[in-house]
Length: 310
Ligand SMILES: [Zn+2]
Image (cartoon, rainbow, N blue to C red; front, side, top):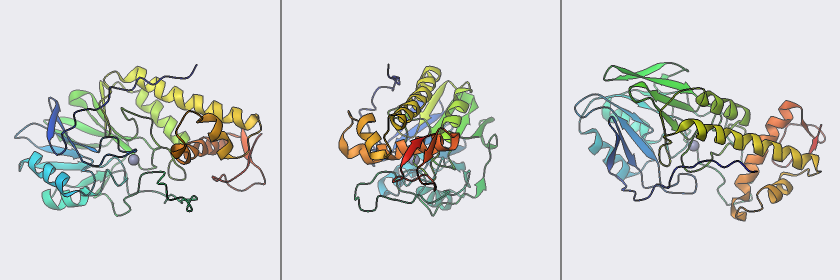
């Protein structure tokens, strides 16, 4: 029986450029950058009361209309911090502009880690999100740091590497809210693409969020998860199941990622198979590291390596 993830209902009726009140202290502005990775678009969160100090999370992509929408939402109120979950191009590019505009510091774990080498250069199909290499935070946060206070309630950094090596979630204790960036999404599983993406780190970070007691998860893409525990358990179980399926393909004699994808993603559109190959690759990297699989003829695991069971 395949694991079923209880995805939240689709985010319909999107009003781009409008700051929508989604909880007592949280507003969300959706940028008009829909895609197969960003779903309906990037959700930029503005946290705080009208008239009080604010925090902005993931200012988003470099789009004039999104920039204007942020200015309108801030309404001249003081911004205490600009929090960035990670450096994909749909999350961080407006951070530097917003710092200049408001004087508030940008806060993140750090700049993007290893540059993802694209071994599929012959392909013109984009298989993952593009990276904002220009971003570097003013403040480098570590796990547990209080990154801002809103109305006396702390916002804290929760380090969640995996989707990227610098991915950070942010908790807002006044509402038992966790802003999950791309670590946990409401509408889909997340891309984990080596070398910067790391499946072992990702699964550990899912378990870490599962060990918390948040009431609501606010992803950058899609609707909030309002019953986190069963969602997170299924989200992690799906990865464990996929790992077992990849291992079973290797044990059945498949040596190449493309062969494994054909079987494991038989019901998925072929245009998505390249991205699926990245996901299988991320599991193989972990399985090699675990000693359950090895690369035939040695060398580090790559997209084109031959794999065999150990
Ligand atoms: Zn991302």
